[in-house]
Length: 277
Image (cartoon, rainbow, N blue to C red; front, side, top):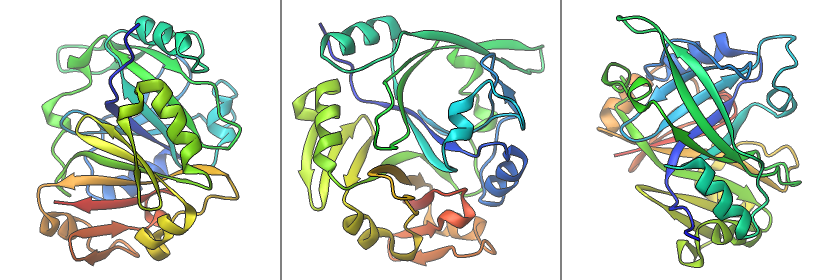
């Protein structure tokens, strides 16, 4: 049995049934978004593609019951997705390690291209939902990477290059840290001030107590809504802070600080965003 290597494939911001508003908001934040996509599962999305990962805005059609987990969750960062090169093998390894996983599933999304539409195809393995309200943890295998990572979608006015950190607020960080250690191996998780951290490929996932989270984001700290665990913030690498700050001029609540530019959750559908160079 070989455990998966922790690598972030993408992160998901849940916008419920307000995809038009979310599209406008993230374009105001300087992101180039892919054309609207329609999954065979019934959901809709826009993507902000980066070098090796991406940010997804996920939504359900108004009045549609095909994706109840989208409408049942609050707006904000709600999905942390790890990469898999073989979803079936990932599912087998996780189950053998005692990680509570669901069966693998496969779905598609048509992609309009100049030469004609083609179906992007994905295989995913979801962990069973934690009772803490954390959100969705799952693995994604891309069977058609060329339809997702296209250079015309990877250039952003804010200079975004990729995810360097996902931040989770948790009253007991070690509980989630133990789950990640079971998924990826004990050496991937280490103690940090205020919690613990999972090392992932080019990035990391920090799990912080509410006090430690508030110390880092102050009045830009997202509201956990009483949840014991919740996905709160993203740190994104940018080509330059000047480029990011220029693209974000005029967005309410955005502030430039030494070494970073912070976007409050009110401007990013419930997620705090932090740009670093």
